Length: 135
Image (cartoon, rainbow, N blue to C red):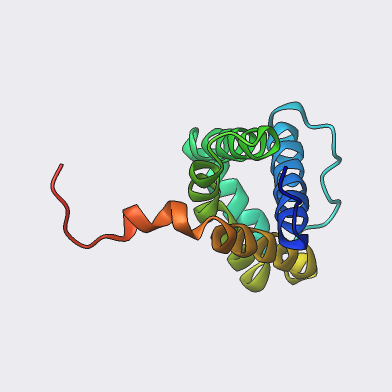
């Protein structure tokens, strides 16, 4: 039996933390068990309001978060979950940089976890990064 390295434990912890964050916040988008902040910067409120008015973007985002978080927690299709969550993570950090700076520390933790896991699973992404392939 092979012993686990420190990197194996760090990857496990990062996967579980990121999975938990996305599962909780994804489910919150449907079940509303975390109270909304009383005050939100005007630009952030306008942006979220525009997403709500589309009728599909907010449910799509929360579905991606819930599914990605669940896959990470279950250790199933982890590279797929990371690819699914990557655009969400980019939007989280940009949202907090440009519209709601008070959330930057948490957003940075999410970005760090995503990047660490993407690096840890980099061999799984290698086939997607081939310039020209035949089906």
